[in-house]
Amino acid sequence: MMSSANEEDPFLQVQQDVLAQLDSTRPLFTSYLRIRSLSTSPTSPELASARADLESALASLAEDLADLVESVKAVEFDPASFGLSTPEVTRRKRLVQDVGGEVEDMREELAKKLGDVSSGKGKSSANGGTNSDLPDPSSFAIGDGDARDGDYAAEFEQQQQLEMMREQDGHLDGVFRTVGNLRRQADDMGRELEEQREMLEVVDGVADRVGGRLQTGVAKLQEE
Image (cartoon, rainbow, N blue to C red; front, side, top):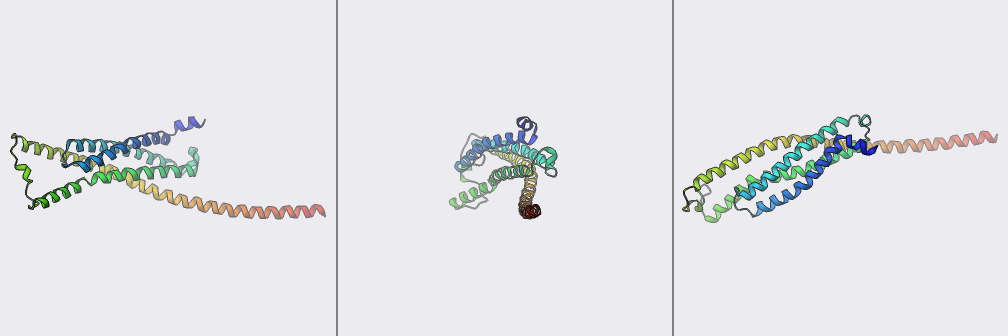
């Protein structure tokens, strides 16, 4: 019966997908960081490909994470009616929090791209002893006549990638705001559970004492 209930629970279904996607996204993230650290050009085809793969994986993760958030919100106010315990709801909130935090860390690394590129250009200019507004000396090298067109195409492609990333950032930001709310709610729920546990311990202690007194009283009555 438990297996059947789990199969019908939308959270558990999406949870499996999210954890599987997270496992497959981590190597993409590691690969992106490695390629970025070795790349000398922000328009490197290998870097662009690694970035696109990571962006796609994160976008898919964010969508499923949003589904998990909605699932938690649907049951958090009345877990019992869904056959769930309060600790299980807390566990689900923690899962959303942990996954959301890891995805956000990856997104922040992607957002560092512009800063890294600017920093790289500044260092290049400083090494050359020229003003940072001047073009790189290598741009004056004699080519096949298509170099400038290639630069424009690369710049256009980069702008498209940046625009796509901004749109994805907007979607991810909404998810992470919700994750942050869930995190605070999970903390509050944890404190409430601890307070309830302490109250139950006090009640149990009082009940034990009262029960002991009643037994003593009954024993005395029987002796009389």
